Length: 371
View (cartoon, rainbow, N blue to C red):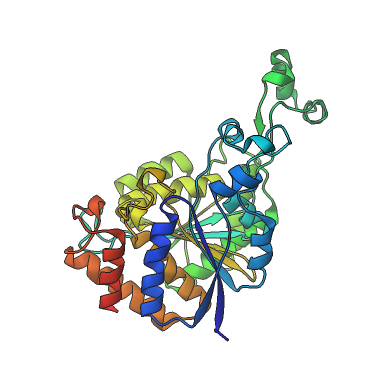
């Protein structure tokens, strides 16, 4: 029996391409794993009304973690139009499968490293080495939304004087997304950021929010961060607003180290940080819970490139490195990162985005040779 059972979730679009690249490298590492395929993606939404079938979630409970490729997501109305006609008007509502996995499996922590590997012509500046901790289950991405707004919800919120002014528009004309945050969620993500900083000898932790405007939710995050920081006197806590932080990341990215934020702000920060180190083709992510984790590159499914083996696999290969770290396979993780770094530094084999003309699989094969 293999040491690890890993749920294998290609998704759709270029998810299949980069997962094939991942398998080349994992096999070269001789990871003792059984890869168990799971149905997930846009085709299952169209044919079944569920992009993450229950059979896939059930399968995942028998594995130790999951590797996920990419998935197509579309707005609610567009998704409904693409349903099989036999499913139309039966109450099916599209819900992002990665968000569902995060919530159902309580993958509360999203870890996104953004590192400028020497030799990458797309680096904004050498020496950038950021790690973003993003709370993964709360905030604006929690999915607590309404359109139209139910009368009971509106009546409950009318205790707040600012809500009455919206009544003139009519409830059918109102849409609402709620930013719900808990002290426990804030404490968990900030504590993990500090623990990571201490373990990896990082210089500082920066909490990013907007408490001067989002006074209650942003205030809760910042107050909780200050409380947590009291237990880590050796690591400075910096506090910034999301808009200012975006500017400072462009101006002086090397000044920052570990960043921590709620769900949406963490998403914004991680994509901006990815742009500083070569783009989403180099951006990896780990969705981590207490006993399970799902690993994914942060690029989308890019359906126009599906099956062309054109996209950069480095994000997926760096995602494999995160998975190996989480599994406790530190030696394999370090070997993989060294091989990736060597291929980037040589700049002889690479995809179109870095100015070269190799395929997705050719890049993966070069990394495998370096191993």
